[in-house]
Image (cartoon, rainbow, N blue to C red; front, side, top):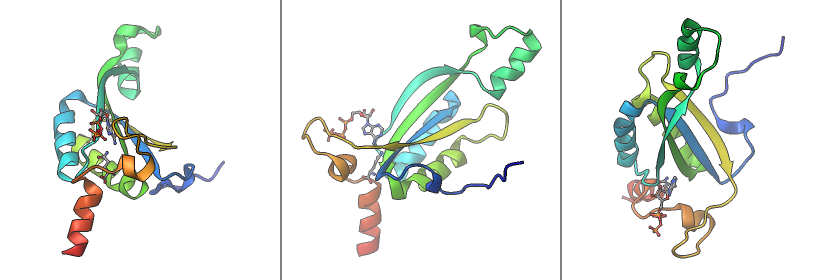
Length: 146
Ligand code: ATP
Ligand code: GLN
């Protein structure tokens, strides 16, 4: 059997300056998650209404029969948050804290390395484009200089 090690940091993903935290969550928890993220200085967030199939859908499916049918997809919200590498674990921990019920269907988080960020208004790239005025990095540096 292969040895499976629990991973608590994204050491195994390709190294990048920025990552996208993509979380598929329960729609009725989104308000709570986004206000907690905003409180920690995460201001750039994209959400979409999606429909998905996981263990939760699978349970329904097994009860309903063998055929995988489209009406078994469950309504979810996809949250996409691009942050700098040092903010990834904090964002993931916050999402889990606010989104978890402990029941099947709480969702899943995917971590995706991002090659670059470009701000359309200014043409800025990289760190300049990813940083947001009054955002998490500004909040942290204000704390450490005062
Ligand atoms: P500007 O200073 O020109 O307003 P901005 O960086 O604040 O630039 P917006 O143009 O306000 O970016 O962002 C447009 C949309 O892009 C947002 O509504 C949001 O959906 C998405 N977005 C921006 N930043 C992020 C991010 N870091 N992660 C995920 N989505 C983001
Ligand atoms: N990393 C950015 C900052 O610290 C915030 C990114 C975001 O809000 N998604 O300013």
